[in-house]
Image (cartoon, rainbow, N blue to C red; front, side, top):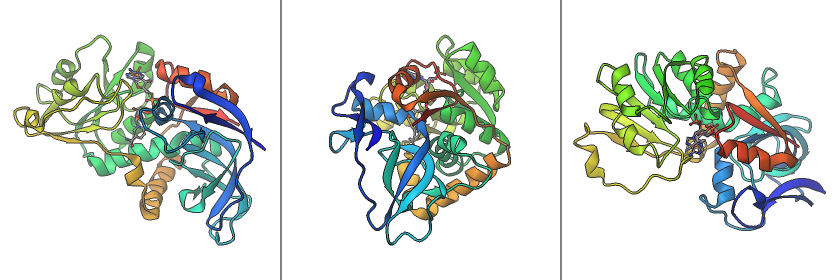
Length: 324
Ligand SMILES: NC(=O)c1ccc[n+]([C@@H]2O[C@H](COP(=O)([O-])OP(=O)(O)OC[C@H]3O[C@@H](n4cnc5c(N)ncnc54)[C@H](OP(=O)(O)O)[C@@H]3O)[C@@H](O)[C@H]2O)c1
């Protein structure tokens, strides 16, 4: 039997139950891994609350983990027992052990430990596709990043700065402002009290930014559109304050022929080639220590309710790891 966190219905953090279950033997294309670190992500909140619906109950939640291969399906030949591996986006991570298709896994290089891997697989691959694929950040671009001291935020701000962007970060507190500044942000907006678009125009001599990476959603959609320069791109990629309300595309013309896109990591790692391309760039930049990775919160898996509460109450910075 292995300890897992399952939900039998959606709702607040109390719906997460610590349970002992038996896990499936691996099918021919699968492996069993023993988790040594599990990543906490905002998508776990959406799944738990019901914003992102599940196919069936009960369900082990959690999307990201790292650990050791313990058992191999008969047709798996690119992994071996004892390999250190990680994955970014596969439901069922809140568990001591799990069965998973081998195609979802990547091997960890020697210079990426499992705690770092559980801090970067989902968040770092998201930062990667956002700045290299969704909108290709160029040297000199002014860009706006929400939740700049968060998990995705701290990675994205550092990486965009390396690409030569001038990063404006929105953060929820002065402490987060200090952290965001130490991780790539040139300018800060305390967006609980300051007018976002007005500050952006002040920082950019009235021109606006080339791209807004908005993970907050409902509360900031309008301010994000009003912060863009003509032909600018709004990348709305999260719903921390709730999903963006329906809107008419006709509002985009008068604001400067703007672009709006709503990408997901799932599409960007849908093929093995896409997954390996992103992972290779991520491991190179993190392995070279050009980007600092912070897992600022650590919880036992059994304390997962507190971890969710802290994430939803905006009390976390950087990445959070759960230990089985
Ligand atoms: N589309 C994709 O492919 C994809 C993939 C990964 C993540 N995401 C999204 O990226 C975002 C960041 O994920 P993460 O796991 O790294 O989380 P995170 O940024 O570490 O945590 C969320 C942060 O959002 C900010 N926030 C603003 N309004 C909030 C509200 N009403 N309630 C709660 N938080 C609020 C808070 O920072 P401040 O206090 O500084 O405002 C909070 O710390 C999430 O929206 C997530 O859904 C999307």
